[in-house]
Image (cartoon, rainbow, N blue to C red; front, side, top):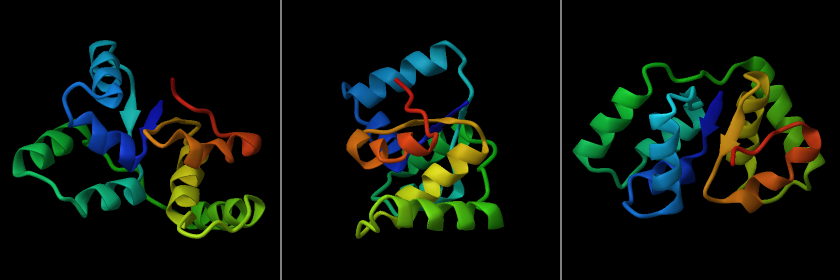
Length: 124
């Protein structure tokens, strides 16, 4: 299972980007692709064309919810990784991926590298 970070999903709609190429490859291989409700919410903040929204809704028939244990895990990750400003959403996305035993696909690798020491796997 691969969970998409918001940055990866946004970039996957931009033709020619590495995220678009990687997404197409994953879809061709019929890989299991998911997204957390946190990343989905960020994505919906846009800007977003109606066509891109329709494509994304067709891609994700299930949005992984953020549950109580994710809140606890994300707070722990936030504290363990230096309480970086503006990183709480990344901690929440990482917590959901960890619970689901999913790798993370992101266009902002540096934002998620700190979570590898806590078990998060990066999708290549």
